[in-house]
Amino acid sequence: MPSSQSYLEYVLDQLSDLKVTYRKMMGEYILYYNGKIVGGIYDDRLLIKPTPSALSLVPTAPLSLPYQNAKPMLLVSDIDDSAFLKTLIQNVFPD
Image (tube, helix red, strand yellow):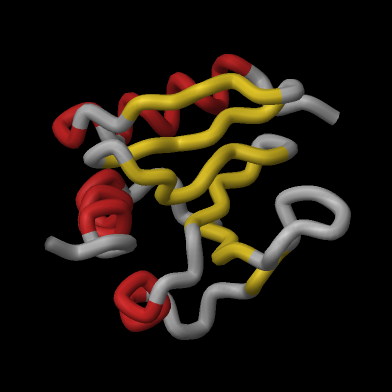
């Protein structure tokens, strides 16, 4: 089931200060920050790359597959906490 435009818009609104960009691919959305892929929206779920720095912020987050035969990613269940989401995105690939 493809992700909805309204879910994408809500996540982007939560991250508005960061200027996160996206690319639509096969009904889903790949998210970019500072030109790097940090995650995506798959089946109306926010999934983030499980880098060591991201894992340190959400050590108990479950891993989930974005699609069959893909690498597991961190499932972000609390998308309502804008400050947390911004910190998480900024720390997927810290400078």
